[in-house]
Amino acid sequence: MLYIVIAFLWVSIWLYLLLGGADFGAGIIELVSKRENQDRTRQTMYRAIGPVWEANHMWLIIAIVILFVGFPRIYTTMSIFIHIPLTAMLLGIIARGTAFVFRHYDAVEDHMQHVYNRIFVYSSAITPFFLGIIAASTVSRQIDLNASDFLSAYVYSWLNIFGIAVGLFTVCICGFLATIYIIGEVTDYQEKQHFIHIAKRMVLAAFIMGGLVFLAAYIEQIPLIDWIFGHWVGNVAIAAASISLWILWRSLEQGRAITIRLLAGFQVSMILLAATYIHFPNIILLKNDEVLSLLHDAGPSSTMEALAIALLVGSLFILPALFYLLYSFEKRKGVD
Image 1 (cartoon, helix red, strand yellow):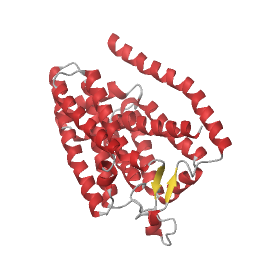
Image 2: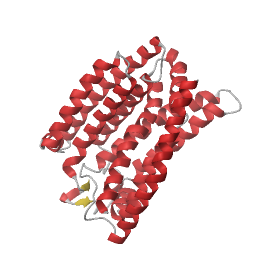
Image 3: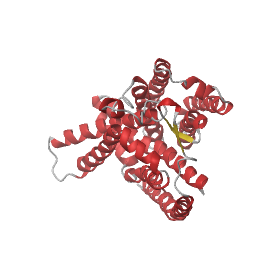
Image 4: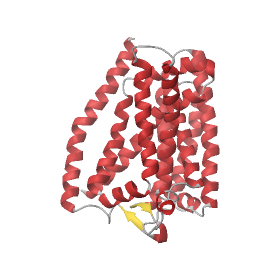
């Protein structure tokens, strides 16, 4: 039962990165678009994510509930020592959702629409930025359970160049996923070329930020290269991601919606696998070579059994409803 819960935790994080990442990327693409293209980009993004944008946060909620119920020590450690970036991320989600609703459904159109637009695009970038910082803090060995002052306990655990680099890399990944998704939604040739151009820029930015992540890891004495390339799984995953990127690059001009979406999702999945496989079952690497493990820091077996059953039964209700929701709006787009 424990491994079932761990599988649900990993899948929920994976889906939140893919689906929620593309959701955040919509605002990022709007942010980096030229002023004359922002209105068109905004309308295209709204048509694509409008009907289902809120459903993406379901995966984050599932991950939080799993940690809270099944791994209370891990949940408590994260809630205490990296509560600042966690709060910033949650505030970004709230601000983004509020701005998204008001900029489309406000009864009065005035200068506040500009304010809503700014809040939406900046919070769309801030949220994945802090998500990346949180991910980096769990492996940077900067969390000190014995810290005796505020800065050491609550700031230095996440505020470092490695965390910032991973945050920027996450922003680029989200923007990349969004453009790949949108390319399959547009039919106008000029508009499609516009998003293909942005997609290529995002790939280049992600490549540069990826290099910055390795440089920051070297400066912070984090053995990231050994983690990723020191095991055959990491080597295979990176090779597969590189090959899929080459195929995706060649497929962009052809505009094969399903193909490029699958390739983009596969590529990000391989990056996630390469970055996390070597640490399993450890989920947080602490100072002084301490770790928090999904196997050794799990709750009582009775709790894990009940949680696993709840997740399995819940998936029987949630997943069919989610697939039907996606199917319904895809069918509606075809009718429109």
